[in-house]
Image (cartoon, rainbow, N blue to C red; front, side, top):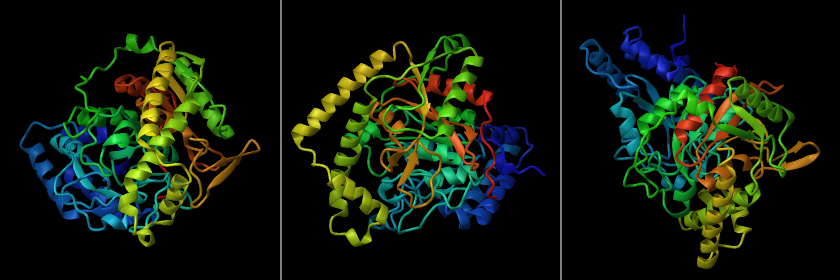
Length: 471
């Protein structure tokens, strides 16, 4: 008997439309899987069984009466618990918000519901989203379905673990420095970091304001690129609550347009080495894209290290200053991971009005320099991270005789937050330990459709998603 929970979201919606799957059966299958797996994975922090089943019955009634059905009619999804879903906890993994329940849906959640998607529940995060692993004092540690001794990443680690294991068909994470793409890479799924404002971050905590608005986004996560495309299409569009919003129309490229794109690839950034399997994954992806007719050539833009340093001044230093007043006086209630992150931030001089202005100007300068180089290579292919999923508590790794520290291993995602460019993580292969390894495709701002289309071409030439061993 087929496991309904491992169909893609697009397949689920299609099977429902053709009356081959009952929405109620689909919801029940996911709830059964949550009952079975979540005690070990700890991906969901809240599930509403009754509401999900009731919405499943309503979805089934709509199918029976021949109503017009949305793109995701009856499809069960999950949402990161830093995004407002009416009636669900929105605590962002911190005791400082314990018991916070959203009274309304974020715009992206409303858009998902309008197409018939059913929200099963909300997923775990590190405290205040400040980590590339998922653990907190409210709900504890989330485990990777590929290896329970390893993390699914962060800060959208609960979301990634839920989707990879079949507890959810797809969902939404957020990303200020790799928080969608690193968990996708660690768990063998796909994730899109869009251009700021392309999908509204309204209803996210921390709020999309100031430096968070420049670098932080919300975006879809799923097992296939096709599902990412549908989720993106449903959620995209401006909203007045997002200061970066712009009325950018949807525009999917023709095949001729797509194949005319030149892609530059690089296996490492010249500063932080990646392990051999990650380098091989990038080469494999480059060759796969060549086979489909793309021009793919070695190219690494100048200025990435400057972009990384500027990113830290926004995310780490300025972000720490914004969250500092909330944490001050509550140190005993903070998780060890957040305390450690705060210590790294406090080791840096705080931003002044002058230094913040200088950082902002330097950001604009480096964006201009890198985007000028991308006229020749409008698409970039590179690693997502230096390593695959790491064991809980690890803080450094040896690669080619060099020690790679915790904060450096994810620099491959951080540039694109600083630059404000869309980027997709796509699974390519596995490590000798059987861990997923993905690669990253990034393009120019507001060109999500191009990036997703290239990612789909790559996925078609690779192994794509695989069922994790923990089931």
